Image (tube, rainbow, N blue to C red; front, side):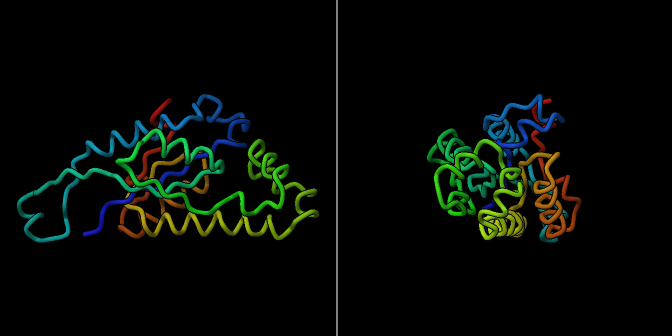
Length: 186
């Protein structure tokens, strides 16, 4: 059996200013720590063998491996630090690689993907914009294919995509396998 994997997706750049539900959310990794604690205390019903179905066997799973997607790479490092050495935190795409200079990268960290969708950036470096867009989809699919659960943002289409992919793979509703930041802190 494989070690269970949790996908984590959280936004920290442009979601800070979208004037929706995220106005009331902390943009620290604290919600991830709350969700990990919840997952580590959940009893999982094992339904992959006839005996376990017949006997209602359960097992405690401790989640130690995380695939992390964020629009801010600093958040992934912060999470890695806060969780400590007992956890494996794997980032996916290296966002800094899409930018040819520090100025553009720093502007991205302030404005998020809206910086990449403005006409000036498209005119300046269309390949960077296309590579970024492709990386979001590739990372979401990779997380959906590998993870057993999701800790994400319900208001994010990327989180919703990952959750549904996980659910489809496990033949259940993706929201049942997802913990949403909004639910954990509101």
